[in-house]
Image 1 (cartoon, one colour):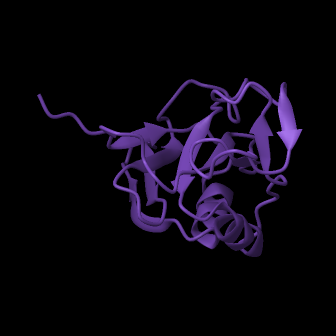
Image 2: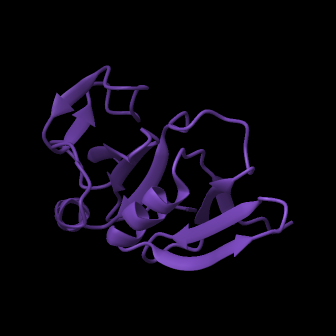
Length: 147
């Protein structure tokens, strides 16, 4: 079976503000549809990604800002961080997890700076959209075998 992640729905409080935020970060605007009964669907796609995010009106009952841990992967985290900042995001400094396996929820166990032993899977930066939905940048230069 071949399955691909296509879309993640995120809850937002102001659709137009969110649309402007993500487009300023370079996300490609793919759709903005409205039904006559108040459903609105906005789809944007991160640069280079096959998967998109969708937000809008009447799409989810989740609280705005409640989606956490969305990961964006890049081969050059410093450059990606700079581009996101230029687009208006407040991006953290680079960090790695003290245990070096993945990272804990929130800011627990973070150590300032890039991972000292690897350029792949260990270095992160983070930011949030205007509602507080949380994103993590992760640097992967060389993928692990089979991925």
